[in-house]
Image 1 (spheres, rainbow over the protein chains, first blue to last red):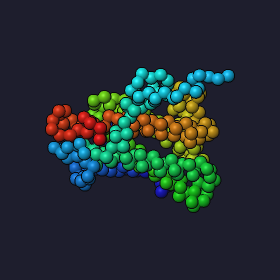
Image 2 (image 1 turned 135 degrees about the horizontal axis):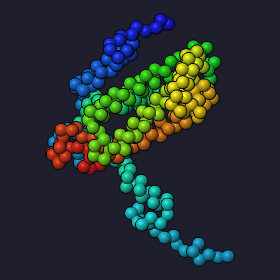
Image 3 (image 1 turned 90 degrees about the vertical axis):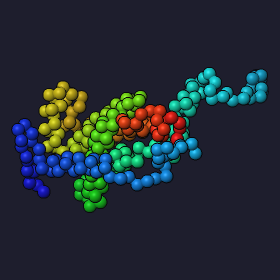
Image 4 (image 1 turned 135 degrees about the vertical axis):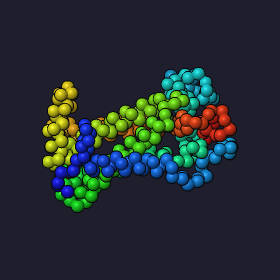
Length: 53
Length: 229
């Protein structure tokens, strides 16, 4: 735990492995949020359905 | 001395739409026009809200609530408690990890809103307030790391002083001054973040959630904006 993190360097980019894991994880979560089906709720007004109730 | 006006029957209350005759009536009229309860507490949402992308903003609010609750405990019991007792360390960890949840959710929320251009249709103020919340949150987190009362906090402060001095703000934002950093962290910055988050949520409620870019206004699909929910 007290050891310094391993760093990846490519050209001017320098990033630690833990930070890279967090960023990649966030991108994965964001992609999943875009494509994963959302459960249906009564509060959601479907296309063509009237909101006057 | 008898006042004729005092014994006269009370005049009927002015309708809410009447010309404001006092500042209270003026504010009431503006609130009733601008903040209808049906918008503030809707029971229906447009179909495009049915996506996990809209969860990130709520997750950020959840993280913020945990930050505030754990922060109140830390402020009450103090540094010795949060460093030396097991309960204190647990609450300290909750505070830290709530911040991680808050920031990760906030960035994911930012990505989602950026790619759907959610500043459209009169929502520029909502977007800008969100940006300011992000900026204040970064400063709040920074002062929090400085306020840890351990070697990590000292190391961050000593290194950060060069940046603040080089930026010309070191004279009134002294990162080596624990009292100033701690005061900012537990009072002023949370007050700013909470106030701005409240304003952000109210503005989202007033304007509604932005339509998807491909959705054309005036089509048969409900947008959630034509009528109060």
